[in-house]
Structure formats: structure tokens, C-alpha cells
Amino acid sequence: WGIQLSVQLADGQWLNAATQSPVRKSSWALQSLLALGISILLIVGAVILSVRRITRSLATLAAAADAVGRGETTPNIAEVGPQDLQRTIRAFNRMRNRLETFVEDRTNLLAAISHDLRSPVTSLRLRAEFIEDESLREEIMETLSEMQTIIETTLIFAREETRTEDSRPTDLAALIEGVVSDFQEQGKSCSYTGPGRFVMTGRPVSLKRAIRNLLENALT
Image (cartoon, rainbow, N blue to C red; front, top):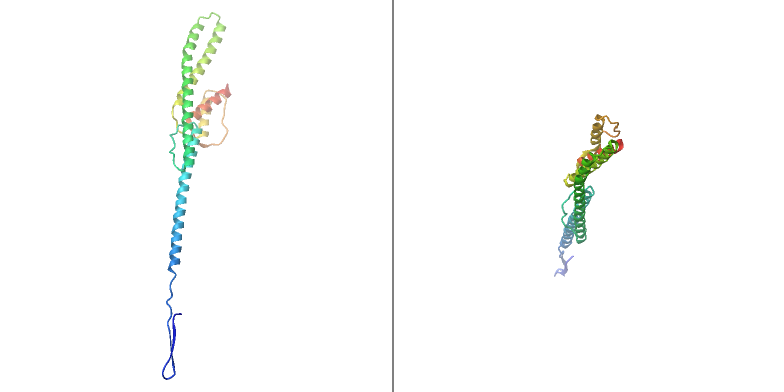
């Protein structure tokens, strides 16, 4: 309530008057709540964006590490995110570059040695032809043939390792069945027992070569 006024008139009656204070709406409270809500939304949005940025970089790093583990050649990862994450990515890039250089140098060395061994083996093969003892000559020629096979296999491996075969979804069951079928057509005893379909991510040419080598060794 506001002001209350009572006045006695000349005839003895009283005149009473009163004023009522206007009700003031608490607009400041609504404004504060609105500002607080907007601030909370902005903070939550900033946190979500920061977390997504960090998790995206971590997911990229995990995918690159998985690819390097499979022997694939991957580009350097962009150094983004917090400083700790940037240092981690920078260390990973250095490790990947050193690892690729190491593997490439060893592969080139292996290829060079295998290539250089071709000439001595060929020379020995020619000289073995002049051995009069037929039994000894056949044993030496058989040994040289094994050495030649090892050298050629090593050169094939070195050449294929220098190629960049990307990983892709591969039906491993169908791949194994195909290799087994090739051996069966050659009259060799082998069979496949397993699921009719088994899809995995890998390099099909390298997988097929590895499975073929395993089966050849087992049959031998």
C-alpha cells in the first residue's frame, strides 16, 4: 500500500483516501535468468566443439596407427588440437617416417643382395655342367635350383613390397578357397574347412601370397 489519508469534514464526517503502490514486475530476475541460460548454452556449445575436435584428432591418430601396423604407407597427420595432442601427433609422424625409411632401406638392401647373387649362381650352374660324375652333378644342380628359387622369391617379395597396395574389404574365405582350388587342380591333396564368407580389411594380393606360401610349405 501507498499513502493513506483521513480528513474530518465540517459536518463531522471523515473523508478517507488511499493510494495503492504500483506492482513492479521483477524484470531484472527474468533478464538474469535469460542471460544465465544463454551463457550456459554458449559454454556447453564451446565444450562440445572442443571435445569433438580433440576426439576427431584422436580418431585420426588411431586410424593412422592401425594403418601403419598393417604396413600401409600413410601421409603425415595434421598437428591440430591441444599442445599435448600436437606433441603426440608430431612424435607419431617422426616415428612413422623413420619406420618407413628403415623398411625401405632394408627392402632395397635385400633386393640388391638377391640381384647380385644371380650371377654367381648362374656361373656355378655353368661350371656344374662340366662335372663328369652324373650323381654329383645332379645334386649340385638341384641345390643351385633351390638357391635360384630362393633368390627369385626374394626378388618378387622385394618388388611387391615397394608397391603401394591399399587395404580394402576382402573375403578371406573365398581367397583361401581359390588358392586351395589351384592346388587341387595340380593334383595336390588339400581342402578347406571354414565359413563360406569372412570379410576383413587387408591387402588381398599380399594375403594370397602368404597363404600360398603356407600351403606350399605344408604340402612339401
